[in-house]
Length: 188
Image 1 (cartoon, rainbow, N blue to C red):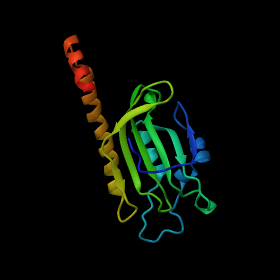
Image 2: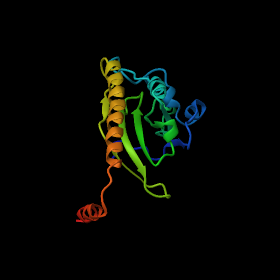
Image 3: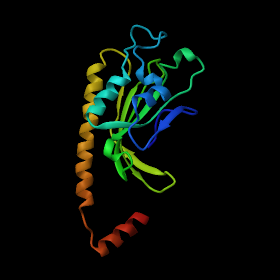
Image 4: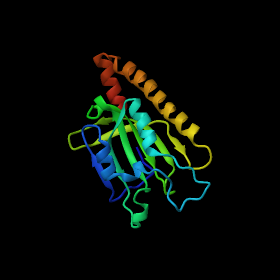
């Protein structure tokens, strides 16, 4: 997965359980911003991250990782770019898990982005591999509410289809000769 965003020396929090609102408020206060930054024009449409998070939590997705960029201008601290990673509560520490990456800002530094993916833990040092599929990007312009809601349901629908296909593939049992042929083909 290649994330088209950079968080360098960010303020972050990660847990093996859902993050509380207090933890989010402490580490990523921009999630709770109630309005756009004062530098934004009338054409800029505010997309409230906390409202999106509440809706995703109702669908069973909980934040387990959150970060936001550091700012030089403290006036932008509550509006800067932030990222939330969400998984279904019972799958936060699972071996192969669907995950939603949510990016947003309220100061014009980022469009609203929602990236669904399926991730698998490879080894104990924290290496993760995975694949993102689909992506929702909504610029902060015009009537965005319908686009954001439609995008969220599109992402949830993608997860349903991917889980069905994954279950079907995992139920296939190859006989040993086919396993060896498959392995040889994968190595060449």
